[in-house]
Length: 213
Image 1 (cartoon, rainbow, N blue to C red):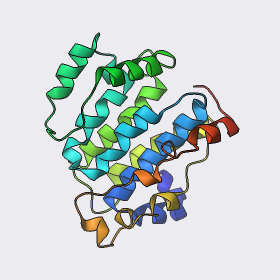
Image 2: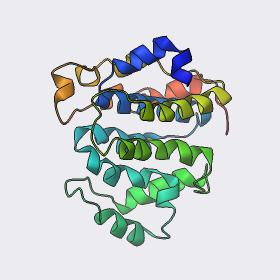
Image 3: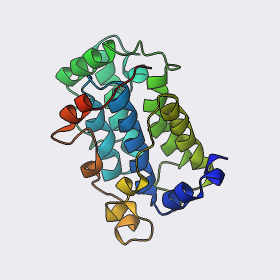
Protein backbone atom coordinates (compact mmCIF):
# COMPACT_ATOMS: atom_id res chain seq x y z
CA UNK A 1 0.00 0.00 0.00
CA UNK A 2 1.25 3.49 -0.79
CA UNK A 3 1.54 4.64 2.83
CA UNK A 4 3.75 1.67 3.67
CA UNK A 5 6.31 3.09 1.25
CA UNK A 6 5.83 6.60 2.64
CA UNK A 7 6.21 6.30 6.42
CA UNK A 8 6.70 10.04 6.90
CA UNK A 9 3.38 10.92 5.28
CA UNK A 10 1.66 8.06 7.11
CA UNK A 11 2.92 9.42 10.43
CA UNK A 12 1.68 12.88 9.57
CA UNK A 13 -1.76 11.66 8.56
CA UNK A 14 -2.04 9.60 11.73
CA UNK A 15 -1.38 12.77 13.69
CA UNK A 16 -4.54 14.32 12.25
CA UNK A 17 -7.92 14.09 13.92
CA UNK A 18 -10.95 12.93 11.97
CA UNK A 19 -11.71 16.58 11.25
CA UNK A 20 -8.11 17.06 10.12
CA UNK A 21 -8.35 14.15 7.69
CA UNK A 22 -11.45 15.63 6.07
CA UNK A 23 -9.76 19.03 5.89
CA UNK A 24 -6.69 17.49 4.25
CA UNK A 25 -9.00 15.86 1.72
CA UNK A 26 -10.46 19.31 1.03
CA UNK A 27 -6.96 20.78 0.61
CA UNK A 28 -6.04 18.04 -1.89
CA UNK A 29 -9.22 18.79 -3.86
CA UNK A 30 -8.57 22.53 -3.83
CA UNK A 31 -5.00 21.92 -4.97
CA UNK A 32 -6.32 19.88 -7.89
CA UNK A 33 -8.89 22.51 -8.86
CA UNK A 34 -6.54 25.48 -8.60
CA UNK A 35 -3.81 23.81 -10.68
CA UNK A 36 -5.93 22.08 -13.33
CA UNK A 37 -8.40 24.93 -13.79
CA UNK A 38 -6.43 28.05 -12.82
CA UNK A 39 -8.75 30.43 -14.70
CA UNK A 40 -11.91 29.08 -13.09
CA UNK A 41 -13.32 30.60 -9.91
CA UNK A 42 -14.09 27.60 -7.68
CA UNK A 43 -15.21 29.74 -4.74
CA UNK A 44 -18.85 28.54 -4.99
CA UNK A 45 -17.66 24.95 -4.54
CA UNK A 46 -15.35 25.82 -1.64
CA UNK A 47 -18.16 27.67 0.12
CA UNK A 48 -20.24 24.50 0.03
CA UNK A 49 -17.35 22.24 1.06
CA UNK A 50 -15.76 23.79 4.14
CA UNK A 51 -18.92 24.19 6.29
CA UNK A 52 -19.03 20.37 6.49
CA UNK A 53 -16.88 20.34 9.63
CA UNK A 54 -19.00 23.00 11.36
CA UNK A 55 -21.97 20.65 11.81
CA UNK A 56 -22.86 17.00 12.07
CA UNK A 57 -21.05 15.03 9.37
CA UNK A 58 -24.25 13.13 8.62
CA UNK A 59 -25.66 16.42 7.33
CA UNK A 60 -22.57 17.60 5.46
CA UNK A 61 -23.54 16.17 2.12
CA UNK A 62 -26.95 17.92 2.38
CA UNK A 63 -25.16 21.23 1.88
CA UNK A 64 -22.34 20.05 -0.39
CA UNK A 65 -23.93 17.88 -3.09
CA UNK A 66 -25.15 20.81 -5.20
CA UNK A 67 -21.46 21.70 -5.72
CA UNK A 68 -20.79 18.35 -7.43
CA UNK A 69 -21.52 18.59 -11.18
CA UNK A 70 -22.75 15.03 -11.63
CA UNK A 71 -25.28 15.62 -8.83
CA UNK A 72 -26.52 19.09 -9.75
CA UNK A 73 -26.69 18.48 -13.51
CA UNK A 74 -29.03 15.56 -12.91
CA UNK A 75 -31.77 18.21 -12.63
CA UNK A 76 -32.99 20.28 -15.56
CA UNK A 77 -34.21 23.29 -13.62
CA UNK A 78 -33.74 25.23 -10.42
CA UNK A 79 -37.16 24.11 -9.21
CA UNK A 80 -36.20 20.44 -9.53
CA UNK A 81 -32.80 20.91 -7.88
CA UNK A 82 -34.23 23.04 -5.08
CA UNK A 83 -36.95 20.48 -4.33
CA UNK A 84 -34.27 17.77 -4.01
CA UNK A 85 -32.14 20.05 -1.83
CA UNK A 86 -35.04 20.74 0.51
CA UNK A 87 -35.55 17.02 1.08
CA UNK A 88 -32.24 16.74 2.93
CA UNK A 89 -32.14 15.87 6.61
CA UNK A 90 -30.28 18.99 7.73
CA UNK A 91 -32.94 21.58 8.51
CA UNK A 92 -30.26 24.14 9.45
CA UNK A 93 -28.51 24.06 6.08
CA UNK A 94 -28.08 27.34 4.19
CA UNK A 95 -30.57 28.35 1.53
CA UNK A 96 -29.96 27.27 -2.05
CA UNK A 97 -30.99 30.23 -4.16
CA UNK A 98 -31.73 30.39 -7.86
CA UNK A 99 -28.82 32.79 -8.27
CA UNK A 100 -26.46 30.22 -6.76
CA UNK A 101 -27.96 27.48 -8.94
CA UNK A 102 -27.35 29.56 -12.07
CA UNK A 103 -23.82 30.42 -10.91
CA UNK A 104 -22.96 26.74 -10.45
CA UNK A 105 -24.53 25.78 -13.79
CA UNK A 106 -22.41 28.40 -15.57
CA UNK A 107 -19.31 27.21 -13.72
CA UNK A 108 -19.85 23.56 -14.65
CA UNK A 109 -20.86 24.31 -18.24
CA UNK A 110 -17.34 25.35 -19.07
CA UNK A 111 -15.53 22.34 -17.63
CA UNK A 112 -17.68 19.19 -17.43
CA UNK A 113 -20.64 17.36 -18.91
CA UNK A 114 -21.52 15.93 -15.51
CA UNK A 115 -20.44 12.40 -16.43
CA UNK A 116 -19.66 10.68 -13.09
CA UNK A 117 -16.69 8.94 -14.72
CA UNK A 118 -15.00 12.24 -15.55
CA UNK A 119 -11.99 12.92 -13.39
CA UNK A 120 -13.36 16.20 -12.04
CA UNK A 121 -16.53 14.52 -10.83
CA UNK A 122 -14.61 11.63 -9.24
CA UNK A 123 -12.51 14.14 -7.33
CA UNK A 124 -15.47 16.20 -6.10
CA UNK A 125 -17.39 13.08 -5.03
CA UNK A 126 -14.59 11.93 -2.72
CA UNK A 127 -15.75 13.84 0.41
CA UNK A 128 -19.18 12.19 0.18
CA UNK A 129 -17.66 8.74 -0.22
CA UNK A 130 -15.12 9.38 2.56
CA UNK A 131 -17.80 10.45 5.03
CA UNK A 132 -19.99 7.50 4.12
CA UNK A 133 -17.02 5.25 4.86
CA UNK A 134 -16.64 6.99 8.24
CA UNK A 135 -20.30 6.27 9.09
CA UNK A 136 -21.06 10.00 8.87
CA UNK A 137 -18.95 10.86 11.94
CA UNK A 138 -15.33 11.97 12.43
CA UNK A 139 -13.11 8.89 12.87
CA UNK A 140 -10.94 8.77 15.96
CA UNK A 141 -7.88 7.88 13.87
CA UNK A 142 -6.70 7.03 10.37
CA UNK A 143 -7.86 3.54 9.40
CA UNK A 144 -6.66 1.47 6.41
CA UNK A 145 -10.05 1.91 4.73
CA UNK A 146 -9.54 5.68 4.69
CA UNK A 147 -6.21 5.53 2.88
CA UNK A 148 -7.75 4.74 -0.49
CA UNK A 149 -9.17 8.24 -0.79
CA UNK A 150 -5.79 9.87 -0.33
CA UNK A 151 -4.16 7.28 -2.59
CA UNK A 152 -6.63 8.07 -5.37
CA UNK A 153 -6.02 11.78 -5.02
CA UNK A 154 -2.27 11.24 -5.10
CA UNK A 155 -2.53 9.18 -8.28
CA UNK A 156 -4.58 11.94 -9.92
CA UNK A 157 -2.29 14.74 -8.74
CA UNK A 158 0.81 12.78 -9.80
CA UNK A 159 -0.68 12.31 -13.28
CA UNK A 160 -0.82 16.11 -13.61
CA UNK A 161 2.58 16.71 -12.05
CA UNK A 162 1.01 18.35 -9.00
CA UNK A 163 2.57 17.73 -5.56
CA UNK A 164 0.34 16.75 -2.68
CA UNK A 165 -0.26 19.65 -0.26
CA UNK A 166 1.72 19.70 2.96
CA UNK A 167 -0.08 17.69 5.65
CA UNK A 168 1.07 20.32 8.13
CA UNK A 169 -1.32 22.78 6.49
CA UNK A 170 -4.26 20.70 7.72
CA UNK A 171 -2.79 20.54 11.23
CA UNK A 172 -2.65 24.31 11.78
CA UNK A 173 -5.93 24.31 13.72
CA UNK A 174 -6.16 22.52 17.09
CA UNK A 175 -9.39 20.84 15.98
CA UNK A 176 -7.45 19.13 13.21
CA UNK A 177 -4.72 17.68 15.43
CA UNK A 178 -5.38 14.32 17.02
CA UNK A 179 -5.45 14.28 20.81
CA UNK A 180 -6.28 17.93 21.42
CA UNK A 181 -9.26 19.07 23.44
CA UNK A 182 -10.65 20.82 20.37
CA UNK A 183 -10.40 17.67 18.24
CA UNK A 184 -12.83 15.90 20.56
CA UNK A 185 -15.54 18.50 20.03
CA UNK A 186 -18.37 17.79 17.61
CA UNK A 187 -18.07 20.90 15.45
CA UNK A 188 -15.16 22.95 14.11
CA UNK A 189 -14.94 26.03 11.90
CA UNK A 190 -12.09 25.22 9.51
CA UNK A 191 -12.60 27.46 6.47
CA UNK A 192 -9.49 29.47 7.44
CA UNK A 193 -7.48 26.55 6.01
CA UNK A 194 -9.03 26.91 2.56
CA UNK A 195 -6.83 27.84 -0.37
CA UNK A 196 -9.73 29.00 -2.55
CA UNK A 197 -11.43 31.18 0.04
CA UNK A 198 -8.38 33.36 0.65
CA UNK A 199 -8.75 37.00 -0.52
CA UNK A 200 -5.87 36.66 -3.02
CA UNK A 201 -6.77 33.17 -4.25
CA UNK A 202 -7.53 34.22 -7.83
CA UNK A 203 -4.20 36.06 -8.16
CA UNK A 204 -2.34 33.05 -6.80
CA UNK A 205 -4.05 30.81 -9.37
CA UNK A 206 -2.91 33.06 -12.20
CA UNK A 207 0.68 32.74 -11.01
CA UNK A 208 0.62 28.93 -10.90
CA UNK A 209 1.20 26.68 -13.91
CA UNK A 210 -2.10 25.07 -14.89
CA UNK A 211 -3.07 21.89 -16.70
CA UNK A 212 -6.23 20.49 -18.17
CA UNK A 213 -7.61 17.02 -17.50
